[in-house]
Image 1 (tube, rainbow, N blue to C red):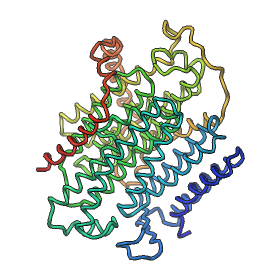
Image 2: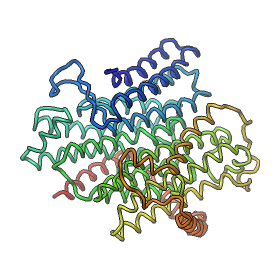
Image 3: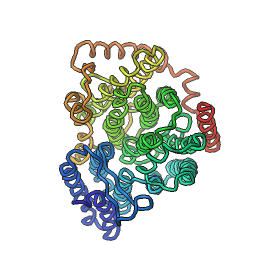
Image 4: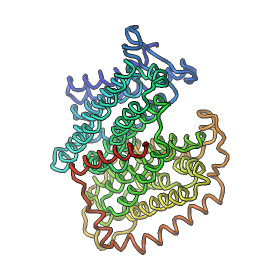
Length: 536
């Protein structure tokens, strides 16, 4: 059992190859065997490691750690591994009805899982670079899998822009290696503390953070995300938004653990607010259901950044927890949107009506996701957002900005919720596909919905067990919390009716704003220069 970390990587990769080589409907069922195997191994790994009270290292080949390949697992990596397996279960079950017999698609999906699990466990920054590049390439193929013009353009945009971003990571990595002569993260953490040339070290940190900014779609280098997420198949959109974007945030956390002597002050806190606010503004202007969800990924990533960069370290768990909460409710929303789009063959919220009547179970699950992302009490989004909000106490401007962002989120999903209403003048006469019963699809939606509710209700024992931190100030069950939420819904509804629903010219301008590839590259350079100016 010492080689469980390696098996977690190899089993999905080998399964993907078997699927590709057999190329028949029976061979594809191995994906369930693979998922079941890594699920069981993950549970065993947690037990034999005694809950990762101490990091677990695996030195492959028993080489010197300075040059060898080492896998590291701790509480953070294990939490991400668990999340990865849950998200892949949902994705596989969701796409099985359409893609289950497509060996090439299942090959790419399972191979991507193995690579992602490798990225989470690697303990050197070069292999981290290799895994991120492989994730980008595989994600690109899955984004443009439909092979229409829109998906091909979006996929190539995603590939090229992320490739430009990762070049800065490579440059920062070369600078670090030039300084200390190793790429092992554990050794680097100690050696970087003794480096006298802090300016040179800071530049390497800024270059790596530039790549992280692109990968996680920080403002202003976020434009690839709505293009990619709206073009990809819904199961891939769910993975992109719920998990793959978090690869950048995972690297962000690891790099900040490594660069203990380098800091950009409150730069990333401010950047989080800008990302969250810009994401909400663009989401409010959209009519395409997947575009609304995609821009909200930008906004929610901003909220995660706010949480991860709070000065009160006990409140940074809010940002970390929001990473996982977002994975559940956003994957639920993307998968639900995929079901609706397939049934109606429409994507505009103004043209889709009567969803609740035609698909009651899907509607209920979607509403769970909407309540979660908007911070309703007794749902998981409320818990992480409340922890972050308490971390901002004392900073009046930050508190008001955070409230505005939450209000914008509520307005966006009030806008989306019109799809559950009766038919209107736009939706009458639209042909709706015949209802199909696929238990796998409903199960795929039920999995993240279960976690949205469970974490929202049982957050106290969960957080106490994992973090051992007091969060008695989170009062999800109290009437006052529900009243506050209902007041925000009322305010949001009034603003939505007076401004957003009118679809004024400035809203249309925002909706049709298109940032070209060349402009995105200029924004990336600007992003790097702002970090340098902020530091000096």
